Amino acid sequence: MASELCKTISVARLEKHKNLFLNYRNLHHFPLELLKDEGLQYLERLYMKRNSLTTLPENLAQKLPNLVELYLHSNNIVVVPEAIGSLVKLQCLDLSDNALEIVCPEIGRLRALRHLRLANNQLQFLPPGLSHCHLNCRETSVFIHLMWRRRGVQSHVVLPMQYRGADFSEVLIPPCSYKPWHRCSIFEFPVLQFLGMYLTVDRNRLWYVPRHLCQLPSLNELSMAGNRLAFLPLDLGRSRELQYVYVDNNIHLKGLPSYLYNKVIGCSGCGAPIQVSEVKLLSFSSGQRTVFLPAEVKAIGTEHDHVLPLQELAMRSLYHTYHSLLKDLNFLSPISLPRSLLELLHCPLGHCHRCSEPMFTIVYPKLFPLRETPMAGLHQCPLLVPPAGASHWPNQKLELRQLCWRTTVSFVAYCCSTQCLQTFDLLS
Picture 1 (cartoon, rainbow, N blue to C red):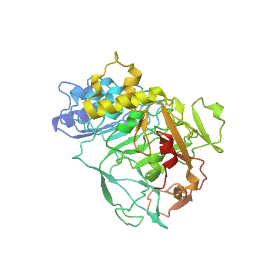
Picture 2: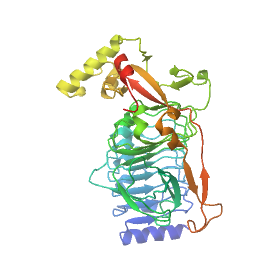
Picture 3: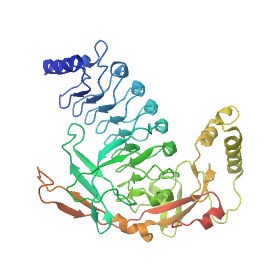
Picture 4: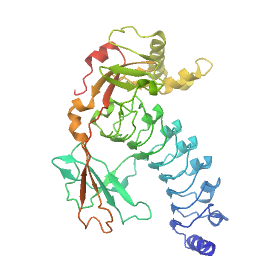
């Protein structure tokens, strides 16, 4: 096995290969042959899925400087070195199905990153540095998508792919709430082009999503299903680029920011009936419905609270002064302002869902139960799956499963004042 591995890497070095497949090699350590001498300077795509790697070398960027795609899913990686941030050309990083408990902040230095897959790890939080990732807007990423239309509703379809078997075994096609690009039969494979960044952190232990994530300018799809989330950032969905948000099976999650109302969302399995005392978070109740609020919220305003707290007034005044006049918050220092408040000025708690006024300590929430909105019908999602034992699907007969459920989730409008609270209309 070792001699075969050395031969494979030697041939790749000699012939200046751009793609190298080292899947299913039972590797416990990163191959030293990849790091010898000048490394593999021409290599752009490295596939190392389903091995037993536990870490990555510190000199990875030095030896493989031109990596564009790195696939490491289904290993035992516990730590990703800080040097990962030096892979300046990296566009796709797949670390799903590993043993990660944290993600180093240096990943935010990957300015070309478009796809980050972290599903099936043990992450409890995401680094705020992710907000520094930017998409090169001159590039487009190509995906195999399939649109299935039934009674005017587009739905999820799972299709095995043979085209890129070394990369993916299947593709999940999200629904689309606006006019489809193609009308096609279920056996067609249209190729669509998208421009955006895709972040997947399904099935981890996330209980907190940093509000800085909302500042990612090119985030198009965010999937956080199967975690421990009880609340979402107030500004999630405010960006026009973000079109797909999946938070299914976060049982404590009962409130979705109203910015997500016109987005494609997945929230099945959310809003389990639990006692408020079971989760120690600030909560807001309206009738029989209760939602949890982000931990940074210090106070909840009602329609009777016409006067804002002094600290909130001061923060809003500072924000407008430095953004409209100086346009440089770096002028302030931790000496002139506490570090926590300085961070809030750089990234407010959220923006009013009615007038976009920044909010820092207090919010005025208003609930809109999802089942009472026109969106309710869209959340009885059909799912197409291959029959058990199918080997040549979709040539064989398809099996249709209808997933019907009644959600207890509500859209939450976070407003900045009693006036906005009273005038906010979700459907307008």
